[in-house]
Length: 479
View 1 (cartoon, helix red, strand yellow):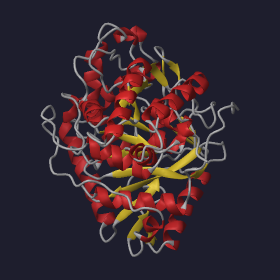
View 2 (view 1 turned 180 degrees about the horizontal axis):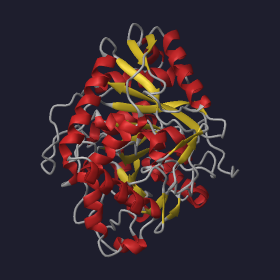
View 3 (view 1 turned 30 degrees about the vertical axis):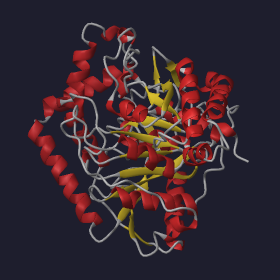
View 4 (view 1 turned 45 degrees about the vertical axis):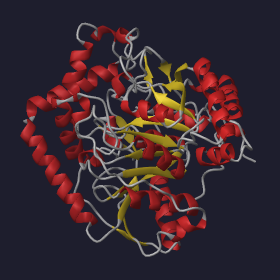
């Protein structure tokens, strides 16, 4: 039987409505679990239990009356610290900003609260969410519940670790180069990078077309549930879209049957990424399982190189995120982590070497190459990360070893950034198996622009044909 703190959100809502479970019982279980295990993984910046318990009691009263049953009513939700809560600290992991307070709720927080979700905890990030490991001088090192030697990834590493450890059924995340999909893949959870504009962000960086706020959960259905609440036009985000169709996931065996006849492209290396053997094997196992479910899976190649993707990405950062970080950290750079200083230096160097129009031309070419490769296919699957794991406290200032190949920048080991460049494509990251080092691996399911429904259908099918939900980390492992 599923331990209560690992209960999925959809099941919890069903039990709330039937009065077989109270939101108070679930909140108590999550709070107890947090006390038992968070000290070993450091996934949270703060807990809001003193506010969460009265909200859970109010939700229980609503279920008893059978009225005002909003979509997330009574569910605990862990919020990434960068998603501000009015009146609470909003530091972005920076020591120099640890006392700053959010002036308003972030749009996704506002929508979660309006839908009845209860923000009971806030989760760690690297500084300014600019790394794919999660540690900072302010909060220390966040560790992967599956093996605490390794990182849960970043920048939404605290959210991913909290989900994997049973500290929440739902969590918020964000993704500008893989910050949702990489942590999902390293922790055996599910993460969704929506098409740009689908889910509103906060100005001014909501205008950054690589960026996307979104949901994480332990199941595809729960991820869709939270995505539906987050999506839609918001007056504070001029880029946000109206009229998105609600996502739904076929139940049980119907999920596998729904992919019969779909044409799915398989691309292992996205050009020349040096994919680890266990990551490749797990990705091919997903493809094989989809074939067994009736999908037509064909392996393809893409004309990309990790060097070109990295240059294009950092050119973009050099004109937006890099200068924003410089403004935010002016006068306090002595407090910054090495990875933050390196990010700003790399972004500045790329901007000096490449004009803004050079970056736009490169982005347009990469977008066209993906469109050509996916022509005739319904979706594409590929690994999320070429490397199987990152050290929990790693800085990676001098690159990373990837299967005997030395990469000059550790971001070149991550295969998520191309799909921030192709920014209208929805991407869902789902578990694919276990790496030899004892942590999960994941695949990305990439859709055509704004075809969110297909990536969720394929994700639900993968979840059905490669069952994962019953697997839990051993929180005592520390290799």
